Image (cartoon, rainbow, N blue to C red; front, top):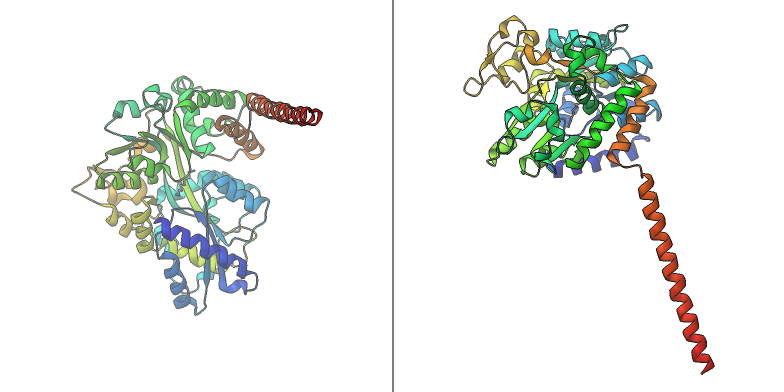
Length: 436
Ligand code: SPD
């Protein structure tokens, strides 16, 4: 999304939010989505389409977030009345556990075509069943985009070998040129996988075990590792990292596949070569999905929104502008992904069904099964999430350490001494003038 468009969208959303209380909630839809996650014009097109389908006017108030946890807190603690939001898998799990989302009632679509049904991918359905073994997340959520977490790197300075291990993020050769996603769970998972290689190889733990591992010991090990990483980091970023990479300001970025795809294309147009790899040790695979929160006030329009996002042409538009892989498994989406000049054939039958046994699609977005098999789904930690967030703050250093407090105290003391000395000097000069 272009910057000016983003600023305009935020301003419009703020203005609309101020006036919404006076409006009938049936004519308003409050959408809360990740930033840089929808193509320009799609919101307006939804408003028109909703009117065509229902004969009712709707005004979308579109708001964005950068971090899963801050979005969740607005709902969990603030009880905000968003109608439709787009959390990641482990947050969907938490919302399900805490009964914060409503089941999807497809009958509300009336005679409108059900694109959600047409979009179904066997892989997504199966992964959504794994979100919560007791409640089928497919009944509460519809996947929007998906991908892996990996390393985006500049091929001029970094070799594929160097990038194929998570150790790269503490490689002194790239100090000052490393970006880390400001997403604690998405960094914790890969680092723990890296640190537990021996246990993974000898079978004493599985990738899935590690996704649930919030033990003090593992938190401490990851913290220790990240403290070694920190001196080389030039930014902890939510969305700006992709641009830093295209501008050659950073060479290595722990990032999501969709940001990587966007950056690779932008970079190529200015002669910078970037590539993306899911390190050999393993990683995480993630899904962001639409849900209707318990405090929603326009569930009908929310369902229509989700349905519209699944319309193949809309899924393709969002993908083309944002770079993220759509979760829609419809044949039109596969067709739009195929580029026989650019890519080697790969087997994507796990995602698109039997017809996709050898299709030329970008493996950054739709990796083959061997990559998927070394990636695991993150899971909710419940109360232990706090421990992770606190460790993250400690590592990034937004909490002042003892040394910081001592330095501040010394500066204040020095300033106080300076003023006392200065004012006593003035007083003695005044009194000596009087004596004369
Ligand atoms: N700019 C939008 C980024 C959304 C990516 N979501 C990935 C979440 C992984 N847990």
